[in-house]
Length: 245
Image 1 (tube, rainbow, N blue to C red):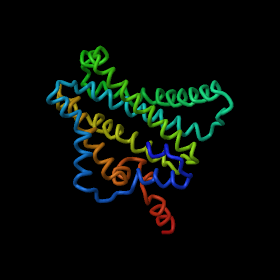
Image 2 (image 1 turned 60 degrees about the horizontal axis):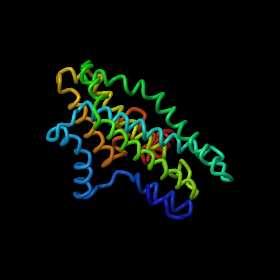
Image 3 (image 1 turned 120 degrees about the vertical axis):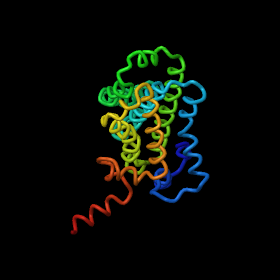
Image 4 (image 1 turned 30 degrees about the vertical axis):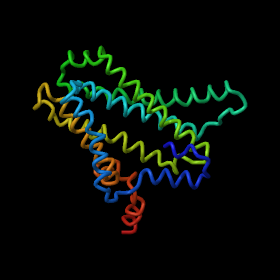
């Protein structure tokens, strides 16, 4: 969202935000390759560099929660009067907004995180090893920095006159949240039990595939997920046609 750092008017900010979440179009071969390669990096890390699959899964969950926190903080900012008269006032406001986002994400962490037990097939030794791995904390710190920069981008856009609707924050939330929900749906079907010790790797593959689909065909992905259709482009038109019938 770095393009929002420019001093554009609200209409321009809104157009650029919408462009970032375009409807399903036919992407170029290069664009498809970039999306696939970028999302497949963790798979390569597991296969060739000794990354632990369960660590990657937990980082995916953290990424989901951190991005949700950033989005919630951004929405809260739209309804909060910012004290611009003093540095302390601005700092307190920003801290309060970020804390609100973290609180909401933390509340969601329990229902979203508990299924990790099933994804590891109850292997508590593997789960414990994750939290003693230095590389895991480095990855978490990088994700936290990226989520913070995402929030800064939202804040700058709103400072230029954008709104949560023009930035399509609800749609962004759906695309982030439903990726993890798709993984949970696979976990609750009990498929992981068929893979034993390799179950975490299976769920990494599922998350990677879902992420690729969500990036290349976001509207199709949203329509395929429970409750996601309302955030897909063209949903309003479809709903109005159904009402007329």
